[in-house]
Image 1 (cartoon, rainbow, N blue to C red):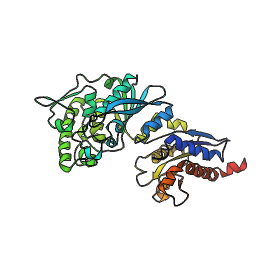
Image 2: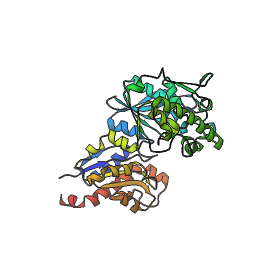
Image 3: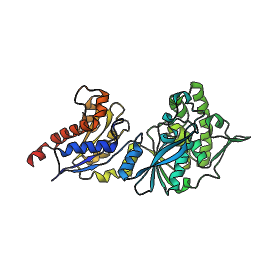
Length: 382
């Protein structure tokens, strides 16, 4: 019987996309097992590269749209559309990302998530009614107020309407949702989130993530107070104890807005992706699963793609092997987590530049080695 091998690998940042990495592994495997049944499933954990993986897996496409960046400057960005046109894949960082703002201009008191709402509206106009939203990498700490404003929400103090910017929202006393876009209730939203931080407090959005977005200590205190005011308004509208719930502080408080007004569940990024791709069904009958990412390190066991794959396959007893550009901790850490083996694709001391330029062949070569080791008996018998 020919072996069935599933390749479910993340991108190697700076060198290979998920699909390119999977293809490289297939190339190596076929040098040993030319007739094997090989299934490629490009995956990601909800972070950078997720929409590309989902587009590739669904034979979809990227949609270019004009939105406003965190400083309300017009930009062109993109989101993913599934092959059947029913699902949009949106990364918050594409419209409200920290990398969109020059370091000397980063100021979360003046940064908005308005562009995220614009992307949602664009997708809705194309007939999309199912959304996968990937949080992370944002430049904002606005509690999702900008996104809500783009969708028709209005914010007021006792005396005037406020712009959806933290520096003004510190005065907010009233939230008007009477003109909120109908898509909010017509659509289903699944949100990838891999942090548990609450909206406010010492471990909240402002104090935990504010400094990396350009906030000083006094700015963080200001932002925390503003988020508390928004949080109370959101709680009142949604009848949810948002201020005591985990994950609401994700992406500067966008997590709270999605929970409050989009009936969204915030779930592990890798599990959301695997569920959407029907991963459990696709691995039935597999003899081996090959996963991996650019680096296997101390962070890899915290919700990253390889550990997500291992956790999903433990009940099946299908062996899982991981390949990576580098393995920076003792392999026993990963073996105890459930991997059969982990391998670095580096053949020896090489430069980062060399590894990036030759990643495809290095990956193929190591996959060839895996095939020779794991399927040695069956290949010899044939």
